[in-house]
Amino acid sequence: MANVVLEGVSKYFNGETPAVYDLDLEVEDGEFIVVVGPSGCGKTTTLRMLAGFETPTKGTLRIGGKVMNRIPPKDRNLAMVFQNYALFPHMTIEKNLAFGMKIRRNPRSSIKKEVEEIAGMLGISQLLGRKPGELSGGERQRVALGRALLRQPQVFLLDEPLSNLDAALRAQMRVELKRIHSQYPVTTIYVTHDQVEAMTMADRVALMNGGRLQQIAKPETLYEQPTNIFAASFVGTPKINLLPGKLRRESDGVQLNFLSLTKRLNGSLGEKLSQLPVTEVTVGFRPEDIRLAPQGVDGLHVVSATVELVEPLGSETNVVVRVMDQVITCKLPARTGLSTGDAIRLEFDIPQMKLFDNESTNRLN
Ligand SMILES: Nc1ncnc2c1ncn2[C@@H]1O[C@H](COP(=O)(O)OP(=O)(O)O)[C@@H](O)[C@H]1O
Ligand SMILES: [Mg+2]
View 1: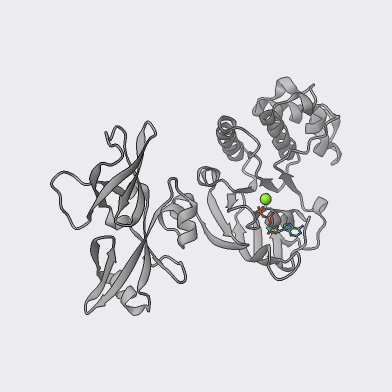
View 2: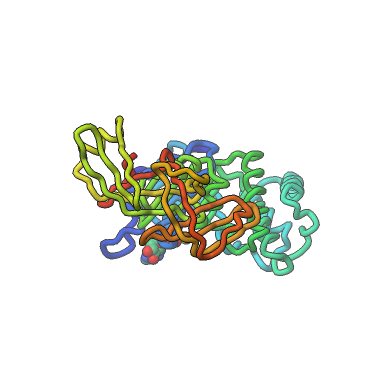
């Protein structure tokens, strides 16, 4: 096993727009990192550079401390699993599984034993005599994983390995992959565009956009302390509410106005903001940080709203409301009894507020 380090890695295919730009990433030995971001943000290119199928235009790749830029793929000792599983259609599952081990000249008896062991772990023992065409998508996926595991790589690279599976199977495989990783803690770099996969599977999430790393953090940190507007919007369903806000400097702090609310920002935040040239800001509240105001409460953080849409999800209710000229989504408890057109009052959980600079889009608080 080994750690993986990317230092200032850029990839230009052609022209001036890089597919990956100045990427710094350190993956610890045994860590499970999920690289996530929208389609086209450079995830696959990053993996392909690590695997040796693309050469970085700039920067250094290190695996286990060794510079890999010019090492051919077969000598990097990694295993890559793609979205389309690339099994050999004419070979049985058993032969497919054994393939990586054969080319490394393991003795035949040990190959058979290990194939059976891994097949048992992945729940595919009964499929060993079949060919890939006779398997479901989920079964084929497990074979591909098994084959990669049997190669005993120092690093595991997975590119959207679950995206061809249906929702139920995907949820099951998420759990299974994590279980396999805790059993065989191989350094893993897992690529997906799916924020749920990223949040549920990763030790740390590396969020990319437009070829650039936006943030690398534990899932809960990414959610609670997003570095910028993109990061805040990428994770969380329903999405974070982003509202226009204005800052007004006062002698002893800063006043924030959004919707019909006024909030004084004192202490270190007020001090910091009063030093900045910023006046226009974006105010973010996650849907669960807005609740129905208790009867009779007319606190500082209460606004009047009109219900536009009620979406009962069983255990909770997503409610879309209009407040002045803004549309806001809140996550309320089950059985709210609300319907479209109702006039309600909402309370904002101010300590959960996320404040962003409109120009840099970076978080200010
Ligand atoms: N072989 C290539 N030649 C030219 N452009 C490429 C090539 N591979 C990827 N790109 C471009 O690089 C960018 C990143 O692609 P990719 O790494 O596949 O993104 P992702 O996997 O995040 O969807 C995209 O704009 C894509 O069109
Ligand atoms: Mg891709």
